[in-house]
Length: 123
Image (cartoon, rainbow, N blue to C red; front, side):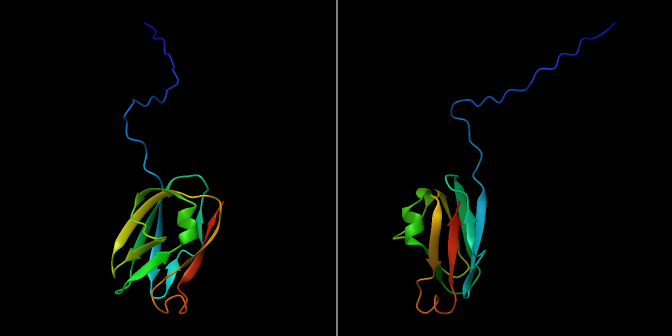
């Protein structure tokens, strides 16, 4: 007996209320006295989760008021254009960035002077 093999293309069907895929994660390390990677490259209009990891034993922040003002913040703790982290702390911010180049620095006394600054490039 012969069997007929019928190939049917698979259709992606997403039910209402289904969980969407998580956005990509960009890890940003804060250390004494810098950020990795640097510069930070992101895609304009695409949701991304920024995972800030303070590898130092003392506090640092990620101060980028223009960047955060021109991004749609989906979730996370951004206050007055900065994310502040205690030593060893990790925080996440999910956002949709707008195209541009934005300056970043640590607002703690003298940290920027010691080299703790970089640029975010969103294309």
